[in-house]
Length: 171
Image (cartoon, rainbow, N blue to C red; front, side, top):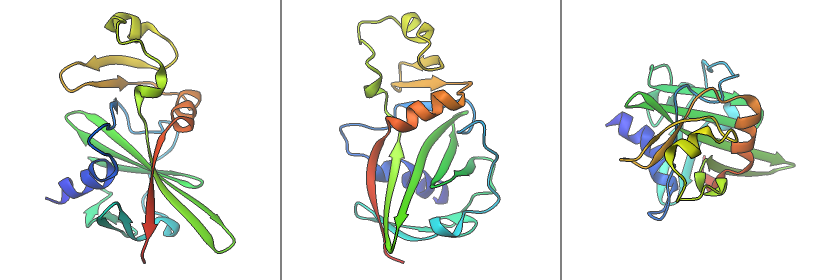
């Protein structure tokens, strides 16, 4: 049940039925950063996303420990990256916090391949050999791209084109 809540925190809560994260990773993202041992204070609190409440503490997300092998958390400046291992691949979402003066804006960022400009008529081989993104496979059953060896430039490009969902801090 707790794992389900974390997965919902990272993905299910943030998307409408029209779209969803269609990208998975072989390794936790971003690859160039080390795993955090605790969640930074600025990302801790009680939050509302759409109609759901999420509690983030120093070592948990909705009471699920970040020290489990299937939950990897990384940080980078104003970003908190959450990777959830499911069926051997990592689902990914990112919390973004921008503060200035006494005002803060919180959002959840997630990657979506619709911005990639991939022609649906392209073959799997054409898509995989396109060097713009490090696609190593396509799960045609579940409908997602699998990426591996994501370098800093690839990751930054994904982040720059990420979709966003507003988050409200209530505590």
